[in-house]
Each structure stands twice: as C-alpha cells, then as structure tokens.
Image (cartoon, rainbow, N blue to C red; front, side, top):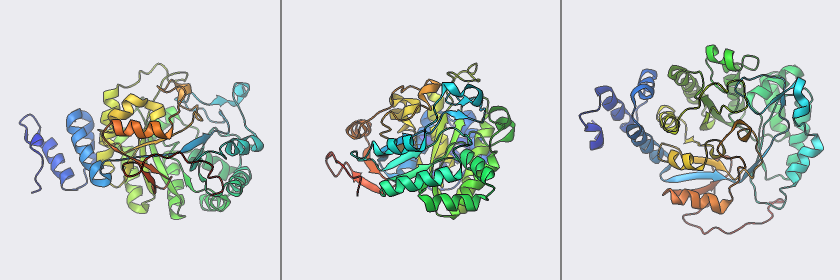
Length: 388
C-alpha cells in the first residue's frame, strides 16, 4: 500500500476520507460519489493537501501566466442569460457597444509595439458577427501579426454562426482554423445539467452541444479550455456532473488544456438576489476541481474575477495558472462586481506576485510552451516583436 502522510492518519478523519487520500497518493481516479463526498465533507486543509500533491506532481512549483489582451466585439447579445451582467439585450443595444471590423483590427494594431503573445476574442452574439465576418477578421489579424495567437469565441458563438451559415460544426471550425483561429477559450459552459441550464441560460446552446463543438475542435487539432460557473443555484451534484462530462471528453480527445472555475458574481444581473459564495468555498472548489479532473494538466484562477488576494490563496489549493497581463481590456467581470475593476498586471508585477507566494513564475504561450522561466532568467523588458 502506498505510504501517505501522517496527517491523513489522524483519528478524526473518516474512513472514506482516508480511502480517497490513499487513491490520490496512488494516482488512482476518484469516483463521482467520492467527488460529492469531498464537496459535502472535505475540510479545507485536507483538500488543499490533496490538491497541492496533484499540482506539484504535474507541474512542480511552477505557476504559469502569459502576456495577453482581450478584444470584446460587443456586449449586445441575442441571448438572455440570467447571470450575465455584461450583455445588453437587443432592445437596449443603445446602452452597449458594437465594434466595426476596422475598430477591431485597430485594437489589435494598438499592440504593435508591445510584447504580447495572445489576443482573446469573445463577446456577445449578434447577426452581423457571422462566419464570413470572423473569417475576414482572423485572416486580417494573421496577416498583420503572424506570431499573435488567436484564441477566440466559444460554442455559444460557434453554434449561432454555424447555424446561421447552414454549415456543420466540422466545416465551420475548419474554415475558422484556415482563417487563423489557433485555439478556443472555455466560456459558455456554465453548468451542463439541463435542470440548471434551463433556468439560467435556456436559449443558447445546451451542454451537449458545447461538448460536441469542443470535441470537433480537438479532432481538428484545435486546443481549448473548459470552465464551470459555480456558486449560484446549482447543487454539488451538478458540479460533479459537469466535471465528469469534461473528464470523459478529455479521456476521449486529450484536447483540453486547463480548467477554469468561474465564480458567480451577483452585481447588475437578474440573479442579484442570490448571495455570492465565500472565499473558503472558492478555495474548496479549486481544490476539488484539481482532485477530480485528474486528466487535466492545469487549473486556472482567473485573477481579474476573484481578485489578487484570493488568487494568492488559490495557489495553495491546486491552482497553477493565473491567466495573464490582461491590460484592462476586459469588462465581463468588472461589470458584474468583481474584485478587480481595472484589471491590469504588468509582467514584473506578475513575477513578483508569484514569487511572493513561494512559487516559480513561468511565462508561457497559449499552448503552455515556456517563453521565460523567471527563476532562471532575470526579467528584461522586451520591445516590439510585432514582426517576429
């Protein structure tokens, strides 16, 4: 039997808790029932120890970040998700923004003299942002700055534009890949279970359609991330169901890179009457995600959403990625009342932030190739790499 730390031999731990610890130390997968047990009875110190063991087995003391910026074409949307503080309905579109093709390309060109490796494109869903529009946009970005990684759109957008274009998921994703799409973010997942999704986001793509589009993308060599919106009306069993579906698809394709738990924020939306969860529950959720999703290489804490202090703590609960520099280019979470109303961290600030928590800062590209290991290299400002 694999030897486990003495901490887990304490008399106060239940037999099931000891059994789960034994499985984790032996590298064995926990079951759905055991995942639910962790949510219902797992204490923070216990969960942190298990999650830290897994994250260090996978990635040592490394904490990853990248240099990125967001491009948000619009906050006007044909869908009406109850939790969303960002979008403006069609009937209230005068309250929002709708960028033109030229405005979007100019937003990318504004970074010509800055060392960034990724543009993250996601926003509302509108008819004018169709398949030909995004083919044109991705092609123009690729032609202007070939080295810039285009991480763009979610199954919510893909489902709409492919249906409008009357093309299959395969044809639509292939066309966008040929235009320049490199990878896709994990948004739009929310909670897969229909009894929750029907209440909070009933009119957009369902959970299975989300999974199907990611599977098609993986089969085309397009890597992706996965998210879960937690802390609203879902129960623990819905979270486990959500992660189980992700774990099964990852077994099948291996195309997911990182899992990103997204905390429900209750400002300025139709679910504002629901209280937000505590920081302790946030940390427990990160840890259980790390334990359950044994076939995911990374778990990310999105610092603009939960704030820098909670992100620091999350590094001791299985998290090994904190996203990137952002440069105050996203409004999705600030409009929902997130901790960071003007999300910006420079590369030196990110390095110091990670080192202050006792970890090793790794600047990565979108596909987790190491750009700089700042435990081995001093930070040197890099200038215009637009033509690299």
